[in-house]
Amino acid sequence: MTAESFKKTFLPYHKKLYLIACRILHNQQDAEDAVQESYIKLWNQRDKTVEIIDTEAFAVVTLRNVCLDKLKSVRQKFDQPDENQADNALLDTQIENSEQMSVVLKIIETLPEYQRIVVQMKHFDDLSFNEIAQATGLTEVNIRVLLSRARKNIKEKYLQYE
Image (cartoon, rainbow, N blue to C red; front, side, top):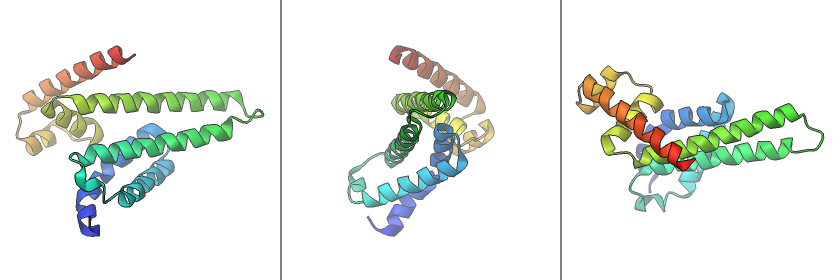
């Protein structure tokens, strides 16, 4: 994969990756670092990415793994016996939230195509119903129905996971 094709393939996901990293790490600086590390990992694996069909999902999974590694390394620092228990509880909550987010991301990947697209555009790209309608050619009513069904599917599958 050339540098130009890499840019065309993966740079459009930058905003989405950043938003996901912010949700997992709860820190803008760490999120920026995680996205940067993800791009480095993707670049180092660029020869393998030619075989990948869904490059967006691959980029999201790579980012998720980088974020989880960051949380684990932070946790190891806080696992010293002299550390404050409140900090450990907060970190445990962050790790639990990141694990829950990874489950939700996996569930979203299994949704029917239009439900997945609408959820991603609404929640990850922060687009309005009107913007989604313009991008997809669907009506706002259809988008609301798809979003409602997608949320219901996500909730049901998440409850089954637990």
